[in-house]
Image (tube, rainbow over all chains, first blue to last red; front, side):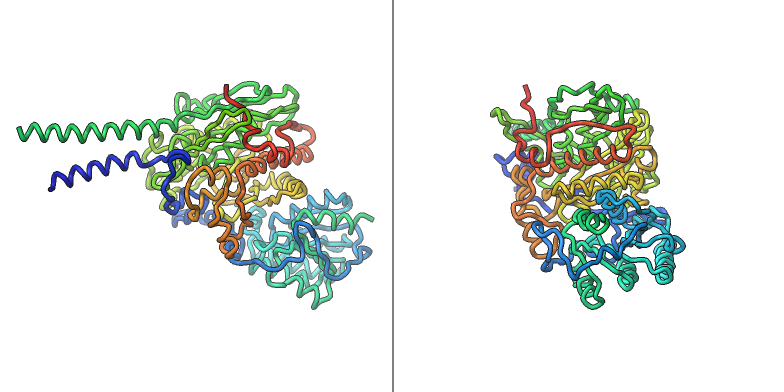
Length: 251
Length: 380
């Protein structure tokens, strides 16, 4: 009996050697077990003994946003309807020269600069870390709101520093009173505690808002447009802003 | 008599084991057969990574670099495919480019198997497909491998309990196996483990050849946050942002995101910090990489169709906009090549003194219309 069992076990062992490395569809593979973390792009947990500043998770560090939480809601924009307006914007409000800056240092600010180039706008200055003392030199200020710890790291500033800069900037805006365009271009992934703090700072003073509609899953922007009477344009995708800014500044 | 019977029984078991072992070994060793590349007429030469890191000579890491030199002065674009061999669109896009590109200004270097060792094995216990076959227009077929994310432990062993790469990244705990991950060990070390030597070869090549811009092609599981996103080192962000807008205007959603300052060892961070090249890395959707996929077969790899993920998206558990019929490999390959083309255009806008010009397979729609059967050449 023991010997029979031993032979059976040996045969099973040998069979298992040939069972790995399945071929094409002609020899169907067994259903895959859940992949080990190293086999996917899922991040490894940051081990304890890392550099003081820690590793950037490959999943990103968008503040407070759960990327796989449900954010499906009824959109006004679509692949066929690329932009949607709430209220009517008066282009005459927005004169040159224009300052483009960022609150939160996300890559969206760089996308905004590209959009200005694509829209053919010439009289603008892009400074992602513009301080309040620059405001008085400009008639229109475009503030791209969206926090990114990667962006803050690249800029070498802390969340506290960025918030302080944003507050100084808005104090200067109150003093100089340029026309303000609040842009939120990162979609739902650019919503979270810090991003919303920056957005709220600017909405209070905004003359116009341009928002990728995906970010409006809780009605934040549409409600602000209605309650504060601020014209708002929703975009389906960030590139749809090129037409908007071309129309706005292409006088 | 009894003893002789036992001996024969044991010999029989051994013989049966040997038969199975031969079949299994043949299957495993078949993974070492590299798929051929029918390079376009623009190919100038095939270099080897050992030209940039002597330690790689004679090893599996002595990888091919397909070089296309127009002879007209300009910049140089390096395309890395197969950094993670289980991310099929990366290698496939690199091979498609190598077989179809015509460079008219500057140079383009293409590495289809950036982790060549990784293509020689699959993921154990995952029931992973090891190869898939596509039919071509002339009736012939081509077979491509699906490898493992990491270097084969046959080529580099052991995984140490602690290892510090030259970027400062400490591989410990859940990251011990990452000592075999090319995309964790940049800028590399000529005296390090094999995978690090490959990284060092690539870094040295970027420096010595004065490479202007690099695209490292990847795929991610549906759960991954940065799908259809190009990560860019801060110096490359303006170019990547322009590419992103251009692709969006082509009808292909593509985001640009900054490389994390602490993404030590990854290509977009550590090659960006240690060379003058503009570093970018792109991810597309690959359902075969996630835990929710069903049967691993050609349909999953080639058609990218996994109903589980579509349902997961409908149920709100997957942020990525999974299409009902999935995203076939040809669309993912076309997206990679379109991204590289638009990156090149954006690079030329920002760096007009050293432009790079090439044509490769036309628009996204052209490539999808050609299909896999049209973009790969028959092997004669």
